[in-house]
Amino acid sequence: MKKYWHIIKNCAFSICVWSVFVIISVGVEEWLDSVTMVPAIFALAVFLISLYTDGYVYGIVASLLSVLVLNYAFTFPFLKFNFSIPENLISAIIMLSITILSSALATKVKNQEKIKAETYKETMRANLLRAVSHDLRTPLTTIYGCSCAIEEKMEDLSKEQLLQLIRGIKEDSQWLIGMVENLLSVTRIDNTGVKIVKTPTVLEELVDIVLMRFKKRYPGQKIQVDIPEEFISIPMDAVLIEQVIVNILENAVQHAVGMTRLELKVFTKGNQAIFEIIDDGCGIEKELLGNIFTGYFEMKEKEAPVDNQKRSMGIGLSVCSSIISAHGGKISAENRKEGGCVFRFVLDMEEEECE
Amino acid sequence: MSNLHKVLVIEDEQNICNFLRTVLETHDYQVLLANSGSNGKTMFLSHNPDLVILDLGLPDIDGTELIKMIRQESEVPIIVLSARSNEKDKVLSLDLGANDYVTKPFGTEELLARVRAAIRSNRFGGGVRPASQKFVLQDMVINYDARIITIEKKEIKLTQTEYNIVELLSIHAGRVLTYAEIVKKVWGYSDSGSIKKLQVNMANIRKKFGEKPGEYKYILNELGVGYRMNADTEENTE
Image 1 (cartoon, rainbow over the protein chains, first blue to last red):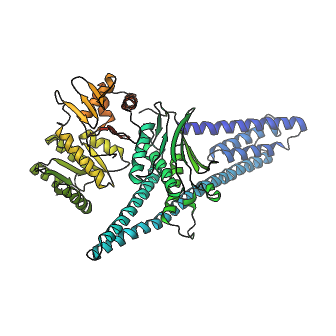
Image 2 (spheres, rainbow over the protein chains, first blue to last red):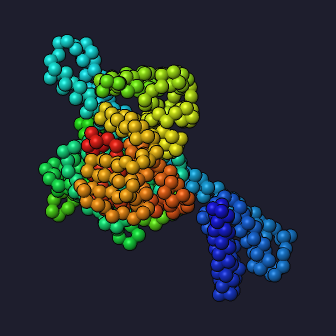
Image 3 (tube, rainbow over the protein chains, first blue to last red):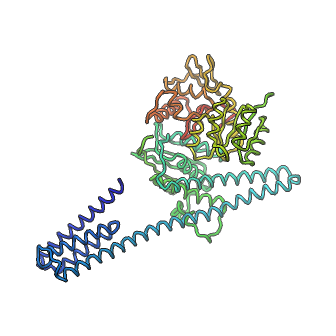
């Protein structure tokens, strides 16, 4: 279906451009009473068609037609085909050459764009991989080191020391779990290549899962929930959206210094569900705000290593943004006048497909 | 308990086995270990365990095959260990007869809660409604004969459908029922809109129970999979 649509689009474009230029040629001929401009006008038409259609076919067909029309209508003898005159033959050859060369050029440019986009994606992936592997070393050092210490010095360690080492192991493995969930989310988007699978998800149930998961990790942190009373079902990949909300909430807990209130608010506006995560902490620095969702991927190799928590913020928010864009939604972050900041993302409520 | 519950763990990863054994033994369960599917099969047949904990990713036999095999023999509760973000596997295992799943990585609390719930669910008779009996969960009481549900001794007015859903879940307390399974048993048929119908009913039930997201204590949420009636009173929020 898509393929046919493509062909139709290309054909329509070619026919339109070509007809317009034929009309222009006739107009110019009438106006100046001369046919010297006409070949140049046709050359332009053929060039445009080759440039903006896919492949060589449309350009070549247009140029052949142009040669015929030129020969028939605009060269001596008028309204008759005559290929015996060398001038006509030469103009036909030139026309065809223009077509083939410009088509080749256009294809090359298009290919280069594709390669560029792929290279960009590849770079992002390499950056991610490098950054992640770098990040993984820190918690692994703790886990490995602590367990070695426990194994070797079991008897010499006081109960308190032992507990401290074990807590270190637990904390850093929790951090690792979070990191792995994020990486899995990224692969869940990337691997399929196609769009993500959306299933209608009940907002209440999603919020429930998020709160449960969050409570497990941060038992002390209260979250104020403000969601509509009515039954709301939003098509989404619930595992991924859950990850987005958890990431943003975690980000607030770790970075919103002085936070006393954390709120998860969802409301609907027309056909859209708007999710807001609001805190009253220290807000986000202006320089960071610009690339807060892309920072992690674009990080330079030589940048000074930051501590674990800051780094995890980077990957968490980057993952959020790729999840939301895979859903065809929008995500943004801004500081509030009252202090603190708000992360906002928007999802479409339109059901694309029922189960 | 004088009689220790026998738990058969079928898992090929040695470290996870050690972890499971330690946790379960320190909580008064008798643990049998099988490091492969075929091994697990023989151990199951010879030892008649009270609970099976089964890893889906075994080297020799597909875990789901094992579930089928066990279900042909008995109604013993089965808990599946699975990876997160794999709803398909979860739903398939549950539909084949597994009682519950625990997602890797999991903590001891979570595991023990599931184990308690699964063993308890078996005591309820594995889905057969006990005649003239009441179901009690914390401050909720279901009177099966009168079809009345009370919370803190106050009657909760439910529609027929809503009551049927709650009753069904309570009969299988501790066990995750998939959306499809509930729909089939409550409505008798399923169409494209039936899962949504179930979800709307569930939202109403929760409203009537006075439960808020993040604090569900009667009917727990298994997002993308189904619902489960809480069966573990020691389970606080998990």
